Amino acid sequence: DRQKNSLVDCIKNYFGDSEVEDWQCQECQEKREATRTVELIRAPPVLIIQLVRYIHVPDGSAVKNSAKVEYQMELEISIGDGENRIENHVYHLRGIACHLGRDLRSGHYIAFCKNSMDN
Image (cartoon, rainbow, N blue to C red; front, side):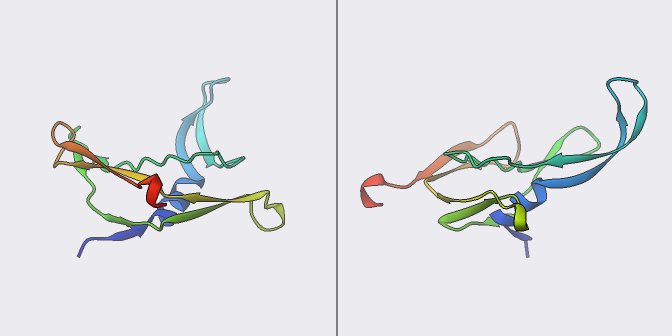
């Protein structure tokens, strides 16, 4: 059975803090441990999400990640947390682009788009 993730899980995994080993300071050129932080400071009017579906392996090639990602027709994004919450923004799914293929060098891209006349 393939692993399933939600789009919300993918977004949460992308944002936040992660440890970086051997980060090199641009000022003193010294290598040290650091923390990388990714955050949204405001919600964009249109949200485009691209999921990286390939995992690079030590031999230099890439393997396609076929884990299913579940999504809803609406996605609510909260900027900030707790007492520091700045805004909530709801996005409505309008389209999905998919790559059909086994590797980076072959396949086709197809799109599924919502018909604006049918809501």
